[in-house]
Amino acid sequence: LIWQHLTTSAQLYVKFKVNSTESDFNDSFSESVDSDGETIGFESLIYTIIDFVNSTFEFAKYRVLIKPVLSDLLYYLICFVQMTDEQMEKWQSNLDQLIEEDDIDTSAFSIRIAAQDLIMNLARDMTTLNDKHTKKDDDLFKIAFLQAIQRHFSEASELEKTQKSSQTWKIVESCLYVMGILSPTIIYTIKSGKNAANEYKSILDNVLLNLNMAESFMAGRSLWTASRFSQIMNDQSLDNFLRITSTLLNTVEAPILTVYALRATYYFFENVQMNQRVSVIKPHLPQFLQGLVSIGMNCNSDTLYLILQIIDLLLELDSEFTATVSSSICSISLSSFLRFPDDAIIFDVVLSIFDRLFAIDQCFCEIQKRLLPIIVAILNSNPNDPSISELISNNKISLQNMAILQPQVMDMLTKIINHSNGLNDFMIQKAYPSMIDCINKAFKDSSAIFQSGTECLSAFLKKGSDFIARYVDPTTNQNGIILALNVSF
Image (cartoon, rainbow, N blue to C red; front, top):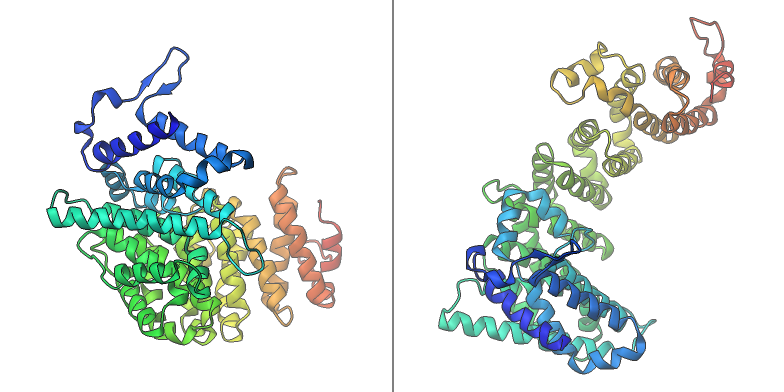
């Protein structure tokens, strides 16, 4: 009965949700609420079926029921991965939503994501990623998955020939999406020459070498899938995809493609670094960075976080290039945490970026000269300080956010001190007393300031306690060590 519901639901989902508008959707499948307040209906049934299969697979004694029909199960799950027009409209109107929901590790919820998660769970339990941890069901899954996507590709091809549907690209997109998600195990299969290796390679070559640029979502998915398999590309193919991706990052007329280009850039950079193929990407780095900075200065937090992650990866690729563009990287990093002072994950990646910049000798001096006056002004909560008055007038920082930013700039100051060869006059005469004063003025429940302040104070004392001892506060006539001892933690 469950199997019948699964197959029927998949067929109806494709017919009425994927390939039809909402107005065509039969009223008998619409959502309703029962007497207990529970939502019931077509989509709820699909969620229940997917959850049931997931739960069944967790028990070893029931897996024998799933294995004989694994290929069919994967085929129907991929049906649920297909995009609906409703999803496309939502993503086109809200790119941040696309960034969130198209993430492999997303916490968002939809039928597409539920089906994707079940496929990932099946693959995680059954497939092999390396020779050290082989799994007996590896061949079973990979052949079953291959059969499922070949069946979908065949159906898409037939529909194209008969011109019965203008949305056959959705079938191909769903297959490429799932292949990209399962790229680690497919790459292992191709590299090891195991069963189905040639078939997987043939599919990738055929689809990725014939990009369909007519439909933005399809073109973007092809690019993203290419990035997931970039570690097994030859240099010529990789260079071609890098050129396409960097160009799309600078193409404002295609926002959907820009989002996919961002995702693809992340995986291209990650794979290039892991496989030591930096020479291939070096010529493209200026155009990549230009696009990243341009998008990053005018986007919301989810998109910005992805951009900052990519920049963080970029810094590891080529220190010489980084040194030449450190000013623009510093600008977008500084702007990012000033715009989103409450966003801890954005600040974490910003701090990582600055940490990498500080480690490059050619960058450190100029960046610390730029940052230290801003840090001191924020610690002093002084809006009239010329270091931040321009930022305030340009709405890059608000007076209300000054206090929120204080623990963060203390962390940044700690990084600067740890990377410096010693304490300079500005650090001792300006930054140190401002940090002490900020801690003493903080409320007792300001745990963030006390934690960051403790680490910052420790960094000062470790780096130059003798210089701190010679500093005398002009107001209290106490030296720097006494000031540290009097801090009211």
